[in-house]
Length: 399
Image 1 (spheres, rainbow, N blue to C red):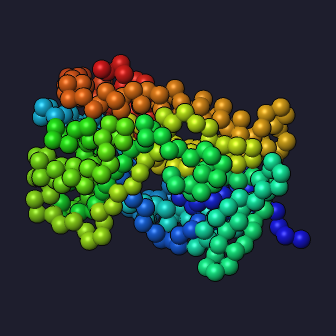
Image 2: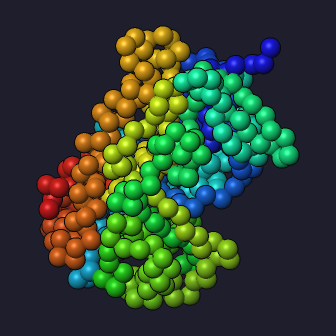
Image 3: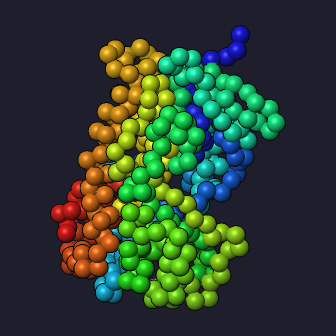
């Protein structure tokens, strides 16, 4: 008789691996499928905030993370269009580290992939492209996937879709976020020979690229992830490469740091961001969406690793409720909808969507950074919200 898993997780990025570890620790048999072969590159800003480290610690992943020697971050440097700048230290708050890390996603995701394989009740299969859901009446019974030239079927009680912003599963269920108002786009490249790097990440609201913003995240003593992000509802993503070039040539901080640097060949890549402000549902019946597949991305900063890890954990907890027959009058998807909204919606996503709009306006950015510079408490609030220590709503009080 063909094996029926407790859950199939499609996608082995942070969301999928978080869900896999959470369910494995509960004793369930899990199958994790990923279309890529590890290690593989993933386009990202590579920042791991203090809140993200707390989640990785809870998953038991901190020893493996530290073994990779990620670049430590103690604060955030922000510059305004009028030239004002502030250095915001990451605050010390109970339950959180007062620092973060920067680690390229290729290394982070490979570490996560290796970690989930340490559980005897987790099976993994890479190079496996999920092509469709297996339906029997109104119920999803599993997934159909292609490995090389072979088509296979895998059955399970529940499915967690963590297969990215172009999720085949979300599209199949009619849940994919295709609303331009809740999308952003970013481009990044790695540079070597970068000067004057420290334990600080930089975010620059450069006037020539507004409503976009640029960043410089150190990945080593003389290497950095450099990029530009923009909201699709405000500007067309086709202009992103032009904005990236403008950031490098016009921003005085970028010009100084990159004056003798070279872009790593093949590292300039763009990617879409499906923002958490999207009002759609994140599940249907026994199928739940996590990470980018469920639009779990910060609308203000475009950061998604924290929400991927947390949504994977929430999806796993919801599956546990279903497997333990605790659903009663609610479907599993309804329980999940309540959970993620309770954790994210008013805590982060709604305030961040409002802030996203405000932070495209030069006068407001200038004002906010002046206030942060004038008040150490405001500066710490700024860094704490970006680092997932404080809710985004606190930033509104700084404006």
